[in-house]
Length: 408
Image (cartoon, rainbow, N blue to C red):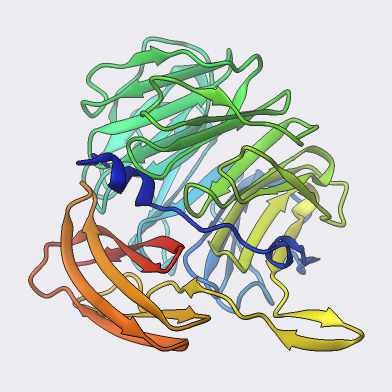
């Protein structure tokens, strides 16, 4: 995302500091139909999600993980699954395998990837552009939703383990070495970024074209706010090697690693707090749909679900938490209308705005005094083109932004 000014940079994807009650963890195991190592995870919403792993295992839930249904797509290991909306997704794995669905996973079709190398990671940059990367420096890209692929390899033979894309042209691939390769022209050329990492990098996530995080072996956790021109270490509190990370916004994130390790941050990784997972299995990937709801997967078919406390216990009496909160729009993806819900703990002057991926303001939904409580507002995007948009709530000192997808 290209920001027009520093004020917007600071505003984008910022979550005000949560109370200690929010960091209180509740990770619980969910029943898994497999003992295979699970490597990839993507939750579309709080009900529907996918996980993949060794021996071609692909799992799906439509009830928040109460039940997971198993499919076997191939005998080869699968390493990553990602969706751009509820209908369109891909799974990647060994031997350059890519499977694609356009009907919400009812059918998966194998497509030619233009590489025979193991693919370890995948990410959507836009509604039609998706990337994958893996062993031998392999990187491939599709500009038609995963139907056809072209090789866009950086000049390396090291193994990539993670990739993150923003828009049609920008992507960061991380991996062994350690290394971070970056392109801003759709993969026509790549540049090697420097970092303080001392061991292999396993995952990367860019929230915008400026704000990004990467993690890996040796407790490596890094942050950049200028597109990777400068990376800084932010691993205070982390004591193990890391396999996966997920950030909801610039401040709020989680990371997972060896021996059941889970860490959370509410200050952009400046400090990390360990959370109790209840497992000793290595955890490989993590995904949250909002600050209260998340999942992680790992070895031996491990699936854990996070549900934040709904109250503060005081002498066995549960009292409601009075808080500010911006909810995920519903439906998402949407066309042309969607509902945005939010909660404010006290009367405040409220501003709710919509931004495009370049940081440009496209609509102001609310700009007035509002009473405490829960509120809903409908956003009609009939006059906008399809793509990724952001909506930001400001109420007093509270700021939060979320992403939504308009499909046309």
